[in-house]
Image 1 (cartoon, rainbow, N blue to C red):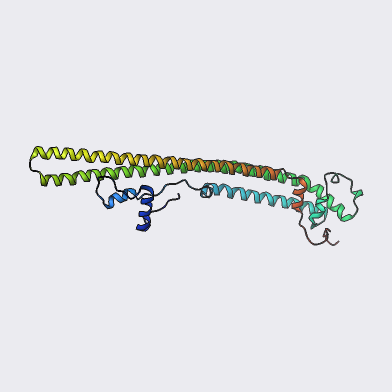
Image 2 (cartoon, rainbow, N blue to C red; image 1 turned 90 degrees about the vertical axis):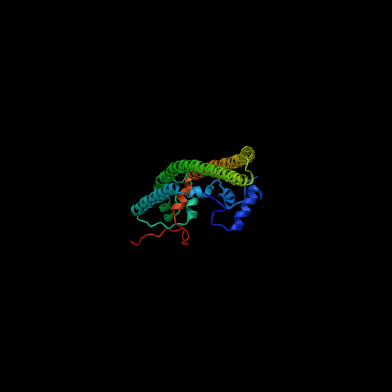
Amino acid sequence: MESTPNRQDSTKQKHAVIQQEHGAEEIPGLPSSPKAVDIELELVVVAESFDKLMEHKSIKKQRDKLNKKLNDLQKDFDKEKYKIEEELGIVTKTSSRLIKRISSKNLNKESTGIRSSSESVDILLAQRLLPVSQKFNEDKANLRKHYHEIIYTTLEKCIATSRDKQLKLLKEQHDSQVGGATKLIHAQVSLEFKDLNKKHKDKDELDRMKREKREEIVRKGVVEHERLSQQFDKKEKELKRQYEELLKRFEEERTRDFLKITRDHGRPISTVLDEVFEPVSLGGQLCKPHS
């Protein structure tokens, strides 16, 4: 939760927030006291940020699972690739430029048409790696799509939980402010009655004065409660608006990430093959083991 100021802040910062939110006036007709100031000294409740919610432990847990499975998938692919290289009796360190020259047509051509023996081995290796690379690319995309759904479903729940928590906190603050104002009203009535008891000895006159004073203070209390209610409604509306904006960001990020997964999955297989060869400065030749 993003909140400022808190009760450890300096007195100057606290008064600055009070003046910004409520103005410098005191509760009408009520005594100035530390308790009156405390009513206003509440945390400013706002929506939690998208980035902070993305760091929630439940989402991090799913991301860690995804990264581990992607890493395991990469290891399995590397093992399969190495197995093919061993079967062909080669250690491939070909330049990526060579793979770019391999089209889907010449992958199916007979090796008798290849200009050099090194290119012949490259083509053979590419032919063997093609289905393996396709499966690897497919499995990786499916894995990312699966966890994309899990992560964003979890995030949506985190946003809903955060919204409920912040709205509850705002309501608790409002109730606390109303309770504080009510206590001040009772305190004011008690002080006024004590003063009247000292000044008026006639019982009928005293009762009349007390009744009028009570009605006056209660009226001012009603006005203060209405002010607090309007203030709460305004803050609640703003907080809900912030969470609506957060949900818009959520939808945008979810769509953007899914489109990225789809684009990566739809890349030409020649590009995928490109990534499984390690470019070295050997002029595109294969490093073959000595016989």
